[in-house]
Amino acid sequence: MKFQRYQNFVELAPLKDAWNHLLNQSASDVPFLTFEYLQAWWSTRGGGEWPDDAQLVIITAMEENQLVGIAPLFFAENLQGKPALMFVGAIEVSDFLDFIVKPEDLRRFLNGLLAYLLNETSLPHWEVLDLYNLLEDSPTLSVLQAEASARGWAYIKTCLQPAPYVPLTSNYDTYLMNLDKKQRHEIRRKWRNVENSLAEPGFYTVQEARLLPAETQDFIAMMAQDPNKRAFLTPAMRRHLEITAQTAFDAGWLHLSFFTLDGSKAAGHFSFLYQNRLWLYNSGWEWDFRDYSPGWVHLAHLMGWAIEKGLSEVDFMRGDENYKYKFGGVDRHVYRLTLERGK
Image 1 (tube, rainbow, N blue to C red):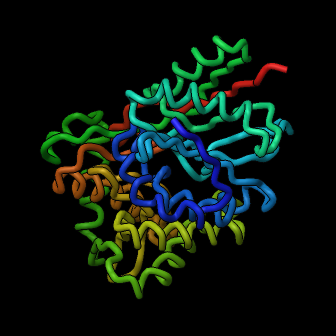
Image 2 (spheres, helix red, strand yellow):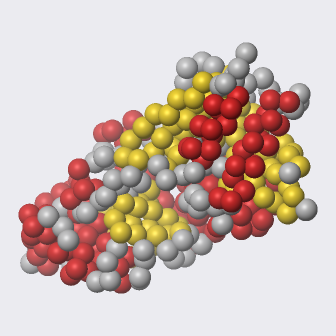
């Protein structure tokens, strides 16, 4: 394998199609690893999570003129103040991250990558590989453990948090029957509450490019009604959401949906429709409609919609919020790996 470092996405642009094609064959084919998403993330450094002087260290591996591996990394001081190489996308706003390589090439790729990272003199001096948000079934976890052991490096694997998902059934009634009885009745009760009201319910997704900026702003305003999310929504983070929405829309996998009552937005979901899954990225609802439980009603509708469309699963992504389990969420976990090189 021939390894090469890239310092900006302009240089990488000719590899965009090959990048995404390789991602489709990798063990972790998630929207947060697409060329488009990571380019957008880097433009805001994750909504201001990292400083502007962080350096891009994306390493590609070529074999017989074919792209066979990508290490989407950047260099900065990590949260512990150590000079580190981390995944582009880390930490807060990109739920799942990994290397981009076919499973059968992973061991060779990582072995060669670590040798390159140690010996390439043009790279910034790093002490730690600090890799966040690896899914529990990623083969990267075991391969890097073996590589660290062979080199005598310190290796720490930390479970960060659960990331529940719902494997979908063939029809909505079966899905409901698989839920806890109390929750099943609660969903039906909230639906009846809306149906028996004088307000006219509706659901729609944003389909027109010209409407997207305004609809995105409406969604962000909904998010900001939650005090915790209001603090999270700094100007830089709002910009990240705007750019991500536009990027995903242009790529064809944005699913920005709203639940309305008498034509007024009551709840919204900022999701990705990618690889036959619905990835629920963020949500918000209007406080004035709280008597209608708009967040629950909207989510119940999305579950039914996803089943009707034949999707394989709904991914609630990171976090252990109670509602995820009430809607049938099954736990899997994300991990952080730290590998500290020998002196």
